[in-house]
Image (cartoon, rainbow, N blue to C red):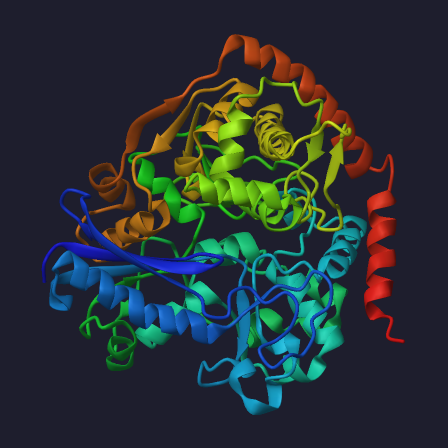
Length: 553
């Protein structure tokens, strides 16, 4: 075999394969495919309606992408399948589905096709927030220590609140499921025929820890029927990230186009896998992955429990380092919402006349505005808050609008809100003894929108380096594949050769920093008022909305 590796990055809306020369890190070619069914938030494919805050995906889309993007990327790269030394896969998480004893999704069986709980719950499925809140309350009453590693709160984006939701609302689905499995692990199992699961996914999304396993006593206290879930519904050999999960089987070859026997790395979380793309990471390095949502991953050399983060796992992001995860549930999704549903028609017409899309048109005009000029302030909670409040029941807010407010001012205020939310996360890390020394950025928005990075640099008062690759997730998976295949003795060695930061750096401007410091204080006042108990108006409005959605005349 040659020294080429393939990384496949399964994002929220599409999948992308990247072929990489493992000796140099040179990216030879990539190929992408959108999921045919997209994100299902309103109804199942047959029209069965979904409730508020549901977000489902079609597992068949992931298999279709797997069989399309790898062969196409290899063809474009001029690399034979037999010259691929290893495959790595990452995916959004927790994005889990119930499967039968043959690893087939229940939702693809006729008897479960109309049952929403049988489908793949995407990471942004927030309909289990009530179950998450009840878990949080119980864990605090019991004094369960494991919760400190997860910021002190259970969030609806994790696996166990969803299992409890399924158990209570669709017990027939729970009973019929042989296992519940994260999509990254499921794809690796389909390719290799093994029952391996990734330690990073288990650690961050399933309350698992190498020393203690799963918190079975807590789960039993939540619901006695959940007590056996780790043994009965989450079976599999948990392997550390960067390790060999298995090798491509004949069935896996039919799925991917790779030759049988090709090494396959343990799966990874799509945001986490971006860290080695910067090259050799050092303690204190923080990576911002800016896409539909925002993920802030940080590596350190000491484990500390930090309130409001998503989790801290030893070896969860890079082997041999402590990995911290925090994030924002809505970044690009919020900008897209405004363009799709909030912009007046003249914006789209003017953008088309200028040969650009509405995002570019708005960005060009927002760039001309000075910090504070619009008088607007937003809370970036269009999809709830992941860190540091861990509350999917919170909603967005825009303050300061007048009859003179223009679309580009709103667009800039939304960008600024995500920057303020990021500063909350970084300040929270440092206030709790976890230093942030260098800040990097990757993801589509980071490379496409220079205004966003300038605003982030000013709000954070930090330099931000952009990772040189435009495919940080897929490159990270290819790096993990190189280590799992034995091309390098460690992930760090592979990252040092195959990854690296680019030359693009956004630096803060002193005058802007001063203005944004004042604006950030206003953001914090709103953040704490609506997010920490000063007003529960957002929650009351959500309850009214949910009741109205359930009403049928």
